[in-house]
Image (cartoon, rainbow, N blue to C red; front, side, top):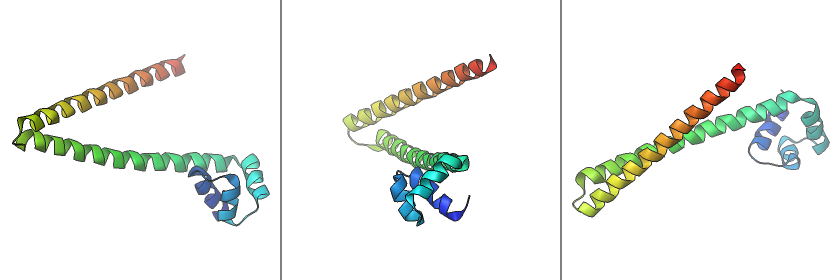
Length: 119
């Protein structure tokens, strides 16, 4: 892909319309439409960019979760108020239960998908 196509891919991956992407890349809308129709690499690149953005967002989300759990643990261990300690303990338990459920569901889906591919 050329640099203008890369610019279009980035713009489309991040929510721009085709017209907006064309303007950002300094090409005509018809050029973007032609690339869309005739350049499968453009659509693949858009998916790659979106996957990269998702991975970055997940990393930031995980950092936030670690910070929140660290703070809850600190409150559980150090708060003078038993009500605050209890609230922190409940929050930790609830967060863990939701996380565990999510991981179990993801594993079940992965097994089902693997089984389906095997058939």
